[in-house]
Structures are given as C-alpha cells and as structure tokens.
Image (cartoon, rainbow, N blue to C red):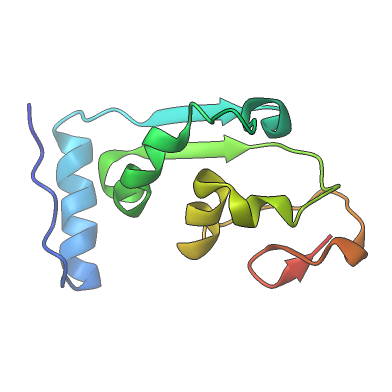
Length: 111
C-alpha cells in the first residue's frame, strides 16, 4: 500500500496526523545499523550513498539509521556524501567518547 508523502509546507499537526496514518496503515519502520563505518566508506566508493536521497523523508517513511565509527579523522566525512548529507540535515547523534581536538562531530558538538 503506497503512503503519500506530505507536501513541503506542512504544520506539526499535519505531520503528526501523517505519522499516525502511516502507523495505522501498518507501514514498517526500517532500521539500518552500520558498524565500523570507516570500513564501509572507501575511496573506491560507498554502497550507502544511494540512501542519502531518502534522508529528508526518513521520518515519514520510517527509515532509521544508526552509524558507528571511530572518532579519529572526523574531518573526513565532509568529503563523504553519505555523512555530509546526515550532517547537513542536522541528524541527531550520540558521541560516546572522542578527542575534542577532532572538532565538531555531531552538529556543533565535539568529541
């Protein structure tokens, strides 16, 4: 069953109703867990780049992405389309430990 995406300019009530409709229709939540992201995102290519186009609609389509990676070399994601898109959209993140000298890892928060 196809669930229509909400229009670009919707209010929070409409978004809440859309989420309730999606749940009522039985649209599943999709969880993608990526461990050791540094081993996935290689200079030769990243198989996860195709998912980046769905990030703006993740909440609406039930897409949840958890990425675990080493904080060493955190400046590299600025060159990686997958990580850059997550950062551009203000994705929520958790930093368990890391070197503050690495700079901002999630939003404006450092390690």
